[in-house]
Image (cartoon, rainbow, N blue to C red; front, side):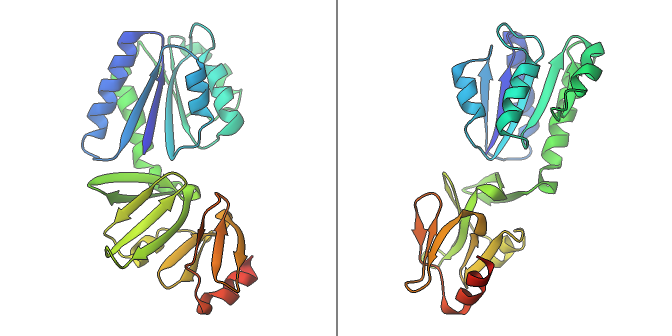
Length: 236
């Protein structure tokens, strides 16, 4: 899921941004959601502090109660992965904003080819997603982008003949073989069974005697076979 988070006190600009997002995402066929705000609020604060696969913030520099830069500071307190785009009417402020080291992805003037520049920025973000630690796959006729860090484990379900990607808040059935998905993983994932790969960062403890892996979200799985126990014990 890609979350586009808009914050602008101008209703016309918010609606324009929503239309641009709809146009850009159409050929990609991926799952996305737009969250729209006219100012900083408790709801926006909660969204900032709620982990999600991918967030793209489009923040107006000047807002009624908290500037776009102030909101960017709030974001960076808990999240250095999300993309932040600042909309501004003051190009001369770009250098001073850059000096604040908030990893702003782009600054876009509302008076300088605004729509084209925003489209260009969105496309750059989407095109570069696979260069970050993100996995893409098709599930239920939609393309999903999920951070590797959000994946708990991946296993092959023989009953449905599908590979199941299990995250903190969802399960995605995909038609690709487990081996194909495994090729997209990094070294934080360890094969614990011929039909399962587990994110080592999500393991709380392991009961090697009973072959049960306990995860840090209070769930467990029994995909631990004898051939992989020794290697897992050594890694942990």
